[in-house]
Image 1 (cartoon, rainbow, N blue to C red):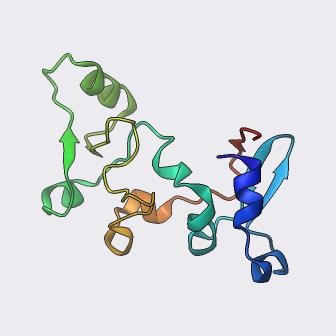
Image 2: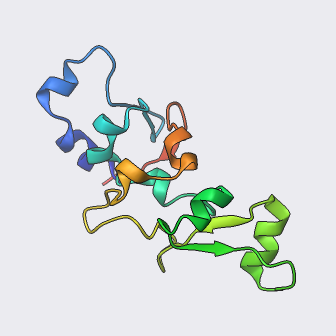
Length: 133
């Protein structure tokens, strides 16, 4: 994410809103937490920056999501890390580490049926570093 791409992307009606979609301070961007407003501009930072997206057992077993289950006997790095963090089930990731449910435009392809972890997540006041271009 670059500062210039963010500034080009803000529509006039958003710029006039009471609470801006984002604010920039010391090369760090802070989004307002409103996914409907932020998603066109943020590049799905929340869906790329975290190691695991935990699923409840019901979500994992529902057949709605592709997931990894931590094995008590597996010694791979992922299972070890999931056990350390207390994560039993997690959404699978793409090769670049982003959520497998991001589409080609970096939008959530399952937004209306996203897991509880995603529904509860809010990026308000979480700092994201910018690359100036």
